[in-house]
Image (tube, rainbow, N blue to C red; front, side, top):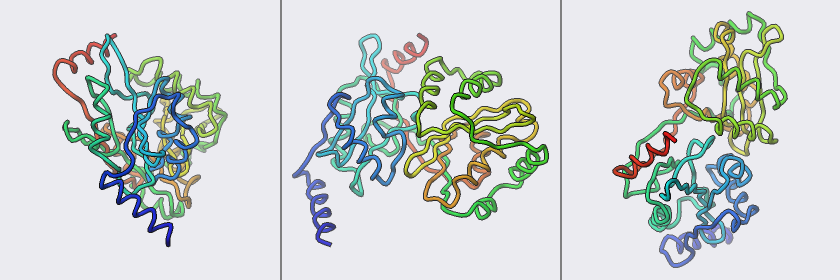
Length: 316
Protein backbone atom coordinates (compact mmCIF):
# COMPACT_ATOMS: atom_id res chain seq x y z
CA UNK A 1 0.00 0.00 0.00
CA UNK A 2 2.88 2.36 0.74
CA UNK A 3 4.17 1.90 -2.81
CA UNK A 4 0.76 2.77 -4.26
CA UNK A 5 0.49 5.88 -2.09
CA UNK A 6 4.00 6.96 -3.07
CA UNK A 7 3.22 6.53 -6.78
CA UNK A 8 -0.03 8.49 -6.45
CA UNK A 9 1.77 11.28 -4.60
CA UNK A 10 4.47 11.41 -7.27
CA UNK A 11 1.87 11.65 -10.04
CA UNK A 12 -0.01 14.39 -8.19
CA UNK A 13 3.23 16.35 -7.99
CA UNK A 14 3.78 15.99 -11.71
CA UNK A 15 0.27 17.24 -12.46
CA UNK A 16 1.00 20.32 -10.33
CA UNK A 17 4.08 20.91 -12.45
CA UNK A 18 6.65 20.73 -9.64
CA UNK A 19 8.62 17.75 -10.89
CA UNK A 20 9.82 16.32 -14.21
CA UNK A 21 9.40 17.69 -17.70
CA UNK A 22 9.50 16.51 -21.30
CA UNK A 23 12.72 16.37 -23.32
CA UNK A 24 13.25 15.72 -27.02
CA UNK A 25 15.97 13.09 -27.53
CA UNK A 26 17.64 11.97 -30.74
CA UNK A 27 17.68 8.26 -31.55
CA UNK A 28 21.27 7.90 -30.33
CA UNK A 29 20.37 9.46 -26.96
CA UNK A 30 17.50 7.09 -26.19
CA UNK A 31 17.99 4.31 -23.64
CA UNK A 32 16.36 1.34 -25.40
CA UNK A 33 15.83 -0.70 -22.25
CA UNK A 34 14.02 2.11 -20.41
CA UNK A 35 12.07 3.08 -23.52
CA UNK A 36 10.81 -0.44 -24.24
CA UNK A 37 10.09 -1.08 -20.58
CA UNK A 38 7.67 1.87 -20.62
CA UNK A 39 5.95 0.57 -23.76
CA UNK A 40 5.48 -2.96 -22.43
CA UNK A 41 4.02 -1.71 -19.14
CA UNK A 42 1.71 0.91 -20.65
CA UNK A 43 -2.04 0.24 -20.75
CA UNK A 44 -1.99 0.96 -24.51
CA UNK A 45 1.05 -1.23 -25.26
CA UNK A 46 1.52 -1.69 -29.00
CA UNK A 47 4.18 -2.93 -31.42
CA UNK A 48 4.30 0.59 -32.91
CA UNK A 49 6.06 1.91 -29.82
CA UNK A 50 9.06 -0.39 -29.43
CA UNK A 51 12.45 0.97 -30.46
CA UNK A 52 13.27 -2.17 -32.46
CA UNK A 53 10.12 -1.71 -34.55
CA UNK A 54 10.65 2.02 -35.06
CA UNK A 55 14.22 1.30 -36.20
CA UNK A 56 12.83 -0.81 -39.05
CA UNK A 57 10.27 1.68 -40.33
CA UNK A 58 12.13 4.94 -39.70
CA UNK A 59 15.85 5.65 -39.92
CA UNK A 60 15.77 8.94 -38.03
CA UNK A 61 13.01 8.82 -35.45
CA UNK A 62 13.31 10.81 -32.23
CA UNK A 63 11.62 10.51 -28.87
CA UNK A 64 9.92 12.84 -26.44
CA UNK A 65 10.73 11.51 -22.98
CA UNK A 66 9.16 12.57 -19.70
CA UNK A 67 11.35 12.40 -16.60
CA UNK A 68 13.09 9.05 -16.27
CA UNK A 69 11.03 7.46 -19.11
CA UNK A 70 7.77 7.52 -17.14
CA UNK A 71 6.13 8.62 -20.40
CA UNK A 72 7.38 8.57 -23.98
CA UNK A 73 6.23 9.56 -27.47
CA UNK A 74 8.05 8.61 -30.69
CA UNK A 75 8.14 11.45 -33.23
CA UNK A 76 9.15 11.48 -36.87
CA UNK A 77 10.65 14.79 -38.00
CA UNK A 78 11.11 14.88 -41.76
CA UNK A 79 12.65 17.47 -44.06
CA UNK A 80 12.04 18.29 -47.73
CA UNK A 81 13.24 21.39 -49.57
CA UNK A 82 14.61 22.67 -46.28
CA UNK A 83 11.22 22.52 -44.56
CA UNK A 84 10.92 20.42 -41.41
CA UNK A 85 7.60 18.74 -40.80
CA UNK A 86 6.10 16.15 -38.51
CA UNK A 87 4.84 13.22 -40.58
CA UNK A 88 3.74 9.62 -40.64
CA UNK A 89 5.81 6.59 -41.57
CA UNK A 90 5.06 3.30 -43.27
CA UNK A 91 3.34 0.61 -41.19
CA UNK A 92 2.50 2.79 -38.19
CA UNK A 93 -1.20 3.62 -38.21
CA UNK A 94 -0.91 6.11 -35.36
CA UNK A 95 1.71 7.27 -32.87
CA UNK A 96 1.06 6.85 -29.17
CA UNK A 97 2.09 8.31 -25.85
CA UNK A 98 3.06 5.36 -23.68
CA UNK A 99 3.11 6.01 -19.96
CA UNK A 100 3.06 4.27 -16.60
CA UNK A 101 0.76 7.02 -15.32
CA UNK A 102 -3.05 6.92 -15.60
CA UNK A 103 -3.05 10.08 -17.75
CA UNK A 104 -0.53 11.88 -19.94
CA UNK A 105 1.60 14.23 -17.82
CA UNK A 106 2.28 17.89 -18.68
CA UNK A 107 0.15 17.85 -21.82
CA UNK A 108 0.59 21.55 -22.65
CA UNK A 109 4.37 21.24 -22.45
CA UNK A 110 4.20 18.13 -24.64
CA UNK A 111 2.21 19.99 -27.31
CA UNK A 112 4.73 22.83 -27.32
CA UNK A 113 7.62 20.42 -27.85
CA UNK A 114 5.75 18.54 -30.59
CA UNK A 115 5.25 21.74 -32.58
CA UNK A 116 8.48 23.59 -31.80
CA UNK A 117 10.93 21.97 -34.28
CA UNK A 118 8.60 21.79 -37.30
CA UNK A 119 6.84 24.11 -39.73
CA UNK A 120 4.22 21.69 -40.93
CA UNK A 121 2.07 19.00 -39.37
CA UNK A 122 0.61 15.89 -40.99
CA UNK A 123 0.48 13.36 -38.21
CA UNK A 124 -1.84 10.78 -36.65
CA UNK A 125 -2.02 10.32 -32.87
CA UNK A 126 -3.90 7.83 -30.75
CA UNK A 127 -5.09 10.63 -28.45
CA UNK A 128 -5.97 14.29 -28.93
CA UNK A 129 -2.58 15.73 -28.05
CA UNK A 130 -2.73 19.10 -29.79
CA UNK A 131 -5.24 21.81 -28.89
CA UNK A 132 -4.00 24.49 -31.33
CA UNK A 133 -5.05 22.49 -34.43
CA UNK A 134 -8.31 20.79 -35.22
CA UNK A 135 -8.17 17.08 -35.98
CA UNK A 136 -10.09 14.59 -38.08
CA UNK A 137 -11.39 11.66 -36.06
CA UNK A 138 -10.64 8.28 -37.63
CA UNK A 139 -11.80 4.80 -36.70
CA UNK A 140 -9.85 1.65 -35.99
CA UNK A 141 -11.47 -1.75 -35.45
CA UNK A 142 -10.44 -4.14 -32.70
CA UNK A 143 -11.61 -7.46 -31.30
CA UNK A 144 -10.80 -8.55 -27.72
CA UNK A 145 -9.82 -12.22 -27.80
CA UNK A 146 -10.48 -13.06 -24.15
CA UNK A 147 -13.28 -15.54 -24.92
CA UNK A 148 -13.48 -19.02 -26.41
CA UNK A 149 -13.57 -19.24 -30.18
CA UNK A 150 -17.12 -20.63 -30.12
CA UNK A 151 -18.27 -17.64 -28.08
CA UNK A 152 -16.50 -15.19 -30.40
CA UNK A 153 -17.92 -16.93 -33.48
CA UNK A 154 -21.48 -16.31 -32.27
CA UNK A 155 -20.88 -12.61 -33.02
CA UNK A 156 -19.90 -13.24 -36.66
CA UNK A 157 -22.40 -11.93 -39.22
CA UNK A 158 -24.37 -14.43 -41.30
CA UNK A 159 -22.57 -13.54 -44.55
CA UNK A 160 -19.21 -14.01 -42.86
CA UNK A 161 -20.18 -17.44 -41.58
CA UNK A 162 -21.38 -18.28 -45.07
CA UNK A 163 -18.01 -17.29 -46.55
CA UNK A 164 -16.15 -19.39 -43.98
CA UNK A 165 -18.34 -22.41 -44.72
CA UNK A 166 -17.76 -21.98 -48.45
CA UNK A 167 -13.98 -22.11 -48.00
CA UNK A 168 -14.31 -25.17 -45.78
CA UNK A 169 -16.46 -26.90 -48.40
CA UNK A 170 -13.71 -26.30 -50.96
CA UNK A 171 -11.30 -27.98 -48.52
CA UNK A 172 -9.18 -24.83 -48.17
CA UNK A 173 -6.29 -25.19 -45.73
CA UNK A 174 -5.11 -22.58 -43.23
CA UNK A 175 -1.46 -22.71 -42.21
CA UNK A 176 1.31 -20.71 -40.64
CA UNK A 177 3.93 -20.47 -43.39
CA UNK A 178 7.61 -19.41 -43.52
CA UNK A 179 8.02 -15.66 -43.45
CA UNK A 180 10.17 -15.75 -46.58
CA UNK A 181 6.93 -16.31 -48.52
CA UNK A 182 6.24 -12.60 -48.00
CA UNK A 183 7.55 -12.03 -51.54
CA UNK A 184 4.81 -14.29 -52.90
CA UNK A 185 2.25 -12.46 -50.74
CA UNK A 186 3.40 -9.12 -52.16
CA UNK A 187 3.11 -10.40 -55.74
CA UNK A 188 -0.41 -11.67 -55.06
CA UNK A 189 -1.36 -8.28 -53.62
CA UNK A 190 0.12 -6.34 -56.54
CA UNK A 191 -1.75 -8.45 -59.09
CA UNK A 192 -5.10 -7.38 -57.66
CA UNK A 193 -5.08 -3.63 -57.01
CA UNK A 194 -2.86 -0.60 -57.29
CA UNK A 195 -3.17 1.40 -54.10
CA UNK A 196 -0.41 3.82 -55.09
CA UNK A 197 1.97 2.28 -52.58
CA UNK A 198 5.62 3.05 -53.29
CA UNK A 199 8.59 0.70 -53.29
CA UNK A 200 9.69 1.77 -49.80
CA UNK A 201 6.32 0.66 -48.38
CA UNK A 202 6.86 -2.89 -49.65
CA UNK A 203 10.56 -2.84 -48.74
CA UNK A 204 9.71 -1.96 -45.14
CA UNK A 205 7.03 -4.65 -45.07
CA UNK A 206 9.58 -7.28 -46.12
CA UNK A 207 12.00 -6.01 -43.44
CA UNK A 208 9.28 -6.27 -40.80
CA UNK A 209 8.46 -9.83 -41.85
CA UNK A 210 12.02 -10.99 -41.09
CA UNK A 211 11.58 -10.50 -37.33
CA UNK A 212 10.42 -12.89 -34.63
CA UNK A 213 7.44 -10.73 -33.70
CA UNK A 214 5.88 -11.25 -37.16
CA UNK A 215 4.03 -14.33 -38.38
CA UNK A 216 2.77 -15.09 -41.89
CA UNK A 217 -0.33 -17.19 -42.51
CA UNK A 218 -1.90 -18.40 -45.73
CA UNK A 219 -4.93 -20.17 -47.14
CA UNK A 220 -4.08 -22.87 -49.66
CA UNK A 221 -6.27 -24.49 -52.28
CA UNK A 222 -4.85 -27.46 -54.18
CA UNK A 223 -1.27 -26.55 -53.19
CA UNK A 224 -1.69 -22.91 -54.27
CA UNK A 225 -1.54 -19.95 -51.88
CA UNK A 226 -4.69 -17.93 -52.53
CA UNK A 227 -4.62 -15.58 -49.51
CA UNK A 228 -2.08 -14.29 -47.00
CA UNK A 229 -2.06 -12.36 -43.73
CA UNK A 230 0.97 -10.93 -41.92
CA UNK A 231 0.45 -10.29 -38.21
CA UNK A 232 2.62 -8.62 -35.58
CA UNK A 233 2.50 -10.01 -32.05
CA UNK A 234 3.21 -7.97 -28.95
CA UNK A 235 2.25 -8.31 -25.29
CA UNK A 236 -1.33 -7.06 -25.62
CA UNK A 237 -2.09 -6.97 -29.35
CA UNK A 238 -2.12 -9.07 -32.48
CA UNK A 239 -1.91 -6.49 -35.27
CA UNK A 240 -3.12 -7.40 -38.75
CA UNK A 241 -0.64 -5.38 -40.75
CA UNK A 242 -1.07 -6.86 -44.22
CA UNK A 243 -3.40 -9.07 -46.25
CA UNK A 244 -3.31 -10.29 -49.85
CA UNK A 245 -6.12 -12.04 -51.69
CA UNK A 246 -6.11 -13.63 -55.16
CA UNK A 247 -9.03 -14.18 -57.52
CA UNK A 248 -9.49 -17.80 -56.46
CA UNK A 249 -9.50 -16.64 -52.87
CA UNK A 250 -12.29 -14.19 -53.57
CA UNK A 251 -14.35 -16.91 -55.21
CA UNK A 252 -14.22 -19.35 -52.29
CA UNK A 253 -14.33 -17.03 -49.24
CA UNK A 254 -10.65 -17.40 -48.36
CA UNK A 255 -10.34 -14.12 -46.43
CA UNK A 256 -13.28 -14.68 -44.04
CA UNK A 257 -11.85 -18.16 -43.46
CA UNK A 258 -8.34 -16.81 -42.86
CA UNK A 259 -9.47 -14.15 -40.36
CA UNK A 260 -11.70 -16.66 -38.59
CA UNK A 261 -8.79 -19.07 -38.17
CA UNK A 262 -6.56 -16.29 -36.83
CA UNK A 263 -9.26 -15.52 -34.27
CA UNK A 264 -9.40 -19.23 -33.41
CA UNK A 265 -5.60 -19.34 -32.96
CA UNK A 266 -5.48 -16.45 -30.51
CA UNK A 267 -8.84 -16.91 -28.77
CA UNK A 268 -8.96 -17.39 -25.01
CA UNK A 269 -6.00 -15.03 -24.61
CA UNK A 270 -5.55 -11.61 -23.07
CA UNK A 271 -4.70 -10.09 -26.46
CA UNK A 272 -6.66 -7.79 -28.75
CA UNK A 273 -6.86 -8.35 -32.50
CA UNK A 274 -6.06 -4.98 -34.06
CA UNK A 275 -7.42 -4.84 -37.61
CA UNK A 276 -5.47 -1.61 -38.32
CA UNK A 277 -8.46 0.17 -39.82
CA UNK A 278 -10.22 0.77 -41.92
CA UNK A 279 -11.43 4.09 -43.29
CA UNK A 280 -12.54 2.21 -46.39
CA UNK A 281 -16.27 1.50 -45.84
CA UNK A 282 -16.18 -1.95 -47.45
CA UNK A 283 -13.16 -3.06 -45.46
CA UNK A 284 -14.66 -1.62 -42.27
CA UNK A 285 -17.87 -3.58 -42.82
CA UNK A 286 -15.86 -6.75 -43.40
CA UNK A 287 -13.87 -6.39 -40.16
CA UNK A 288 -16.99 -5.37 -38.25
CA UNK A 289 -18.65 -8.59 -39.41
CA UNK A 290 -16.38 -10.51 -37.01
CA UNK A 291 -17.85 -8.66 -34.04
CA UNK A 292 -15.13 -6.01 -33.96
CA UNK A 293 -15.69 -2.78 -32.06
CA UNK A 294 -14.30 0.69 -32.76
CA UNK A 295 -11.61 2.84 -31.20
CA UNK A 296 -10.82 6.35 -32.41
CA UNK A 297 -7.57 8.07 -33.34
CA UNK A 298 -6.85 11.56 -34.67
CA UNK A 299 -5.28 13.03 -37.80
CA UNK A 300 -3.75 16.50 -37.47
CA UNK A 301 -2.83 18.48 -40.57
CA UNK A 302 -1.84 22.15 -40.72
CA UNK A 303 -3.04 24.04 -43.78
CA UNK A 304 -2.01 27.06 -45.85
CA UNK A 305 1.21 27.44 -47.84
CA UNK A 306 2.95 24.50 -46.16
CA UNK A 307 0.07 22.21 -47.05
CA UNK A 308 0.63 23.01 -50.70
CA UNK A 309 4.35 22.43 -50.15
CA UNK A 310 3.56 18.96 -48.75
CA UNK A 311 1.44 18.22 -51.81
CA UNK A 312 4.51 19.09 -53.88
CA UNK A 313 6.56 16.67 -51.77
CA UNK A 314 4.12 13.85 -52.52
CA UNK A 315 4.50 14.31 -56.26
CA UNK A 316 8.29 13.90 -56.14
